[in-house]
Image 1 (cartoon, rainbow, N blue to C red):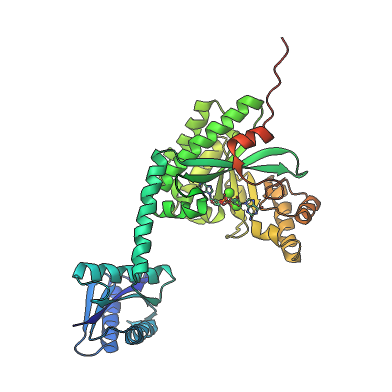
Image 2 (image 1 turned 60 degrees about the vertical axis):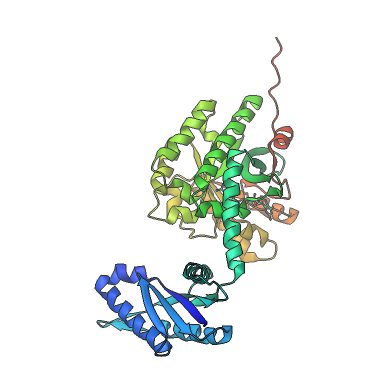
Length: 403
Ligand code: C2E
Ligand code: CA
Ligand code: CA
């Protein structure tokens, strides 16, 4: 015996339920069930597993081509407008397919694999179908392994902070730095943040990583402050998810600075615009408390998000970091220059400092000088480097006073 097991999860069903009410939601599920019934033969099985999840069992099928035809049919039929009590609604489905016995001989395995395939459809943008493959399974195992490794990395101190200097407009003096995390992996060497931060964000580990980064960055900034007697402003990237813990988060920053005897305006918290736009997030309130306590706030990757200007003043933003994508195209694209100019002009009126990110060529440097940008960061001047190297290059020790 062989058959195809197909999982269908409706996309956006919750929104319909929330906006039109549960009665409409129920009617919608009825209509969907009817449509699914019409996509298969009489002796095939259509079931609703709960919520907005449906299952089809198509007997006698073990080839991808025929299963694809059915999945396509299901997809198309779900996309048609549904009228419920006069209201027109649209749903789509994320579909995952498996075959018995090729993809699993036990119910548990087959269901698990159909679920993984369905999640793959969701993650690839919904309203589509995907077949289970052992590659998906391997990816899931790999993901669990990396998460476990991140936990070990935290407990065994495998993370390090690199620092990238931020230069004054002359490209010589350095008065700020951005802390950028790296993972010194015992087998794989130095791993960049893009390889593990997103995963840590999805799995709740970002809070622990964020705490570690805060303590380390404040520790390093304090050391530089005591060596040189001057403030080297250090900025730290914070993911939106770190703000979820009510209030305590701000206190942790203040306490850590106080403990090290570090002036609080040494530290800058970098957040992206999108973080600020989420009305659900407690971040706006926490931003106010941060600036009230003297910690500076920078908007990272400015220009690629909503770029709503109203919040710049309302939230007491200190620094804008113009996204690399604009700086990159300034030499070839007039409108990029116009945008950068507009940002700089606006920021200077609002008394907000501007950092140009990702400066890579002398041409870009010249344009930014003409536009009177405040600060520059990029490979043209320096790449992120280990703390010791930064100390050696950019921290001038206090000269001992003659006695
Ligand atoms: P970001 O905040 O936009 O940081 C700037 C990134 O651009 C860094 O990559 C930096 O090395 C790179 N960069 C600097 N100058 C240039 C340049 O001239 N050209 C090019 N092509 N790239 C340049 P990195 O270190 O790989 O960090 C990537 C992202 O990871 C960061 O983007 C930030 O969003 C995130 N990240 C880094 N450290 C942390 C952290 O401690 N916590 C959190 N939550 N996220 C972090
Ligand atoms: Ca940043
Ligand atoms: Ca950035």
